[in-house]
Amino acid sequence: MSEQPKVRTTEGVVQGLRRPGHAVFRGIPYAQPPVGALRFAAPAPPHRWEGTRQAVEFGPVVPLSLPIDVPPQGSDWLTLNVGTPDPGAAGLPVLVWIPVGGYLSAASSDPMFDPAALAGAGVVVVTINCRVGAEGFAFLDDAPPNRGFLDQIAALEWVQRNIAAFGGDPGQVTVGGTSAGAGSVAALLTMKSARGLFRRAIAHSVPGLHSTPALARQVTAAFADRLGATAPTAEALRDIDPWHLAAELTSFNAGLHAHRESWGRLTEAGTALCPVVDGEVLPETPWPALTGARASGTELLVGHARDEFRYFSVVSGRYGTFTEQDAHAALELLAPPPDGPRAYRAAFPQAGPEELVETVYSDAVFRMPSQKLAEANAAAGGTSYLFELCWTAPALGGILGACHSLDLPLAFATLDSPVAAQLIGEEPTPEAVALSRELQDAWVRFITTGDAGWPAHRPDGHLTRVLDAEPKTLPYPEQASRRIWEGHSPTPFDHS
Image (cartoon, rainbow, N blue to C red):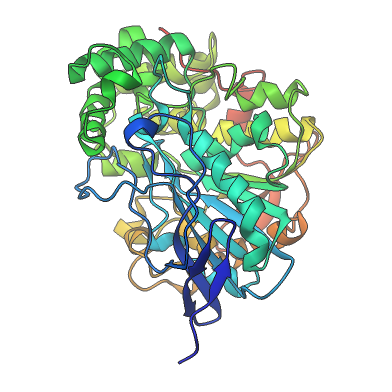
């Protein structure tokens, strides 16, 4: 048996695993564990070590605020994993993937993010863990805001220092994510502290989830009060077990609708604690920063699914149950003011309550933020490649449609992962395999050259790659929604 691969990082030597066609190194710390005095603090540089550190097991999962049963794990949350075609190579392109969902979970160990296929195509893949939920985004009076973003920057700094030792080129780094991971990517595009840490960006299903400081302070105070804490401060929360804190946030999020009159649109976000436009870590939301030339454009691959909201309505058990009252509430809360509700009914005159709810949620939460990020990046001098996934997930008789997160197992070619089985089925169809190849080829081409393989998105043409059984490049399919949202960018949640 061949010797397992070793790499010397700036902190010490790590030994990984040799797999067919590539090598993996797991659980490498890029910052110190954020516990004790470092809890709710900015990430601190990792400790050095003597000898060889075994990098064969994933690091502990950060505390998750999701309605699923995950046993508490260790506290060394701030780790990353590297999959490389060859540690002895040089100049390979790099993808840094941020696997954040809802700003509530971040599990780089998910089999869906296995680097095998991308590494086989010549890409060094880095997946990271970072703080989420209360640990990463509670707005505390005595702690830096947006600590999850600070973790991501610390991981990107580690990549700049070390990726050459794994065969990667620090000048050819693409940062990528989906859902809240894509929201993280969009934020990184505009943050001064992230400049120079990556060259390109991939953002799937970009959400417009941000809070004003005033609302974030009120929400965090309500959460601290629920916990019996004396104040919304790091000092008051530091002694609460992190997994208990995460579980309490899960319960808190489940009751957000009770605050609709005072917290408005935030109550539809599914998470009370999201990134804060604090003026320092995150000076402003990405869309005005880019269109106002306060941030520079880049090479950006961005897109969304056609039926983004369908996954959430099916999983919650609401699919097929929405009433006219639900449609009215959704339009009043989420459509762009003042004429959005009327504009939706005029643009979709045959739509019943179900279609109206699904359309406005899909637009407000993912589709329009993604499409507008493409436009804003181009306005800032960047090159944007836009796609829409329109292929129907075969599972559950097709009711999921082209739903949120369906693109991930396709792009990573992890069609045998548990998530893929839930969406695509235990045995991927030839159509699924072909579409996976299409999307992964676009990723590899973009990560390597900055060109996704279809015409860039421009204001006069809105050309979009439509990913279906027969992929085509067409004018943007959601023109009716685009016209409704023209002149409206996602704005931070504020008091109702």
